[in-house]
Image 1 (cartoon, helix red, strand yellow):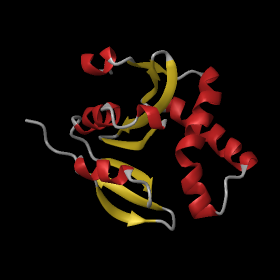
Image 2 (cartoon, rainbow, N blue to C red):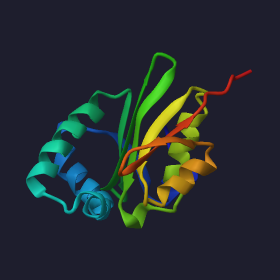
Image 3 (cartoon, rainbow, N blue to C red):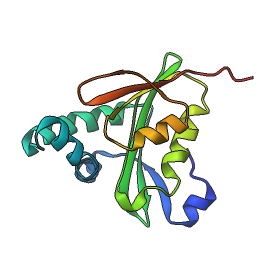
Length: 158
């Protein structure tokens, strides 16, 4: 996956996720989700979150695509998805505030939706990212106490 020149010219780059990236991964996840975890689960328990995110990090590395997002060489986000059996699952994207609303998330969603396969993801119910997913054709098909379950049906490519 290659970022468009417009994003590269603003200092963005993508790189493969490596084991040494866990500390940055955890920092990004905490910055992005601590608010929602506090809201839905009564607080961010550091020990619990370290364990959960260590497992999530290992799983993300096994996905078909796991990339870190760099801005002027500094890690500012991560995204991943798993493509198999004619569908895309495990869609995940997190970016620090300074990297948001600059087109990287849209680029990522354009990339995966262009594959024309059914896609599923989940998003915290109060996370405004849901609106971006809806702009790309995702619809809510279910919910948990904390998340909306969203999917986009695959489209036949001609």
